[in-house]
Length: 165
Image (cartoon, rainbow, N blue to C red; front, side, top):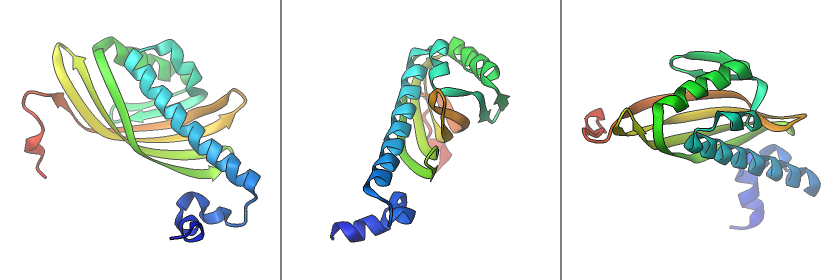
């Protein structure tokens, strides 16, 4: 298969068929910056470092979970601070990230998440999905919307086989 057939099937390149090399490079750099921001998010989650959140989220960010919606950085920071207080050692994995470029300053990332953690004295695992909207702002690329869906979180001992398959 030649590069032309691969490029025409590439979702990232679909509308950029006639783009200049500079435009295509800028698009690729934005996609990579989005992936790096999500990796930094995972590191902040592992360190449980609320002070580092300001480098990730826009001042007007929104975070949505099953328990509600937090609007603005103060509410987002308070949400994560409460979460960090309940979690011991943790490792956070973000995988299968699909990045959709909506404009030269905005991307949407959809990812799987998986974590292992010590919570309440138990070895715990959890998994779900992230949907992140990232925008280039004056301060750089930031998360403006984050939706977290967690269909499973529980202790390792009973496992998750009962969920079916």
